[in-house]
Amino acid sequence: MKTVLITGANSGFGLLTAIELLKKGHHVIATMRNIVNKDELIEEAEKLGAYDRLSVYQLDVTNLAEIQLVKANIESCYGKLDVLINNAGYCQGGFVSDLALEEWQNQFDVNVHGVLRVTSEMLPLLQRPVKANIINISSVSGMIGFPGLSAYCSSKFALEGFSESLRLELLQENIFVSLIEPGSYQTKIWEKSLSSIDTDEMDTDLKQAVLSYAKKSAHSSPDPIEVARLISRICDKEKVKFRYPIGKGSKLLSTAKRLLPWSLLEKLILRNL
Image (cartoon, rainbow, N blue to C red; front, side):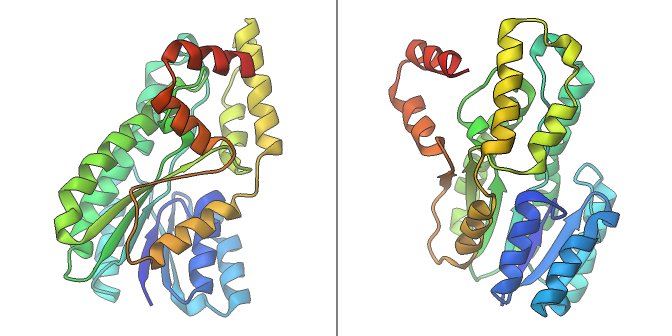
C-alpha cells in the first residue's frame, strides 16, 4: 500500500485518480481548495469500502499555511509520502489583448507557484531510501501555444521547464518526476475557462473561431478516466518515463512540434480553427 497525496481532488482528473488509487488499495490523501466539494469523493470511497484509506483536507495551493498544515498531518499520521500528484490548476481563457495583469498573475500563482509550494514542502516526506514519485499534470498546451490560451499555455510551459530541472535534480535520490500531457478531455476545466470569457470581447473572426472550437472540444472530448488510469499505472510502475502524452492529437502534436518548421505548424493550427 502506498501513501499518495493528490491536489485538486474534488473533480476531473484529481477525483477520478483518487478513486482509481483507492480501488488498488492505496491510501489516498485528497486535498481540495474548498472542502465542501468533498461529498462525491467520500461517497465513492464508501461504495468501494475504502473510506478508511481516504483522508480529505482543505488545501489551497496558493496558501502556504494550509500546505504546511497538511504536511504536518501527513508527517504525524504516516511519516512519509510515496507519491505526490500535483493536479490542482485551472485554465484562464482569453487573448493577450483582453487579459488583465492580475489574471496572468493568478494563473501562474496556481499552475506554477502552487506546484512549487506543494513540492517544496512535501519533498522531505518523499526523500527516503525507497523509490518515490512526483507526477505533475501538464497539458498538450505545455507543448505548443494556442491562440486564446496564452496565460494557460505559458503556465504549462513553465511547469514543463520546472519539471525537467526537478527530474534531473532528484534522480539520484530515487525520486522520479513525471509529466502527464493530456489533450482535451471532458472535465470542468473547459466549462470554467469558457465562463471566464467576456463574449463582448470576441470581436474578430479569429476570436470567434477559437471560442467555437473550445466549446466543441468541451463536449466532444474523450472520457478523462483514461488519464486517471494512466496516472494510477505510473504510481505502481518500478521504472517511470518523464513524459506521458495522452489523448487525441497529443502525441501527434508532440512529434509535429519537434519535426515541423514553425511556419508550417502555425498554418496547420490556424486552418484547423
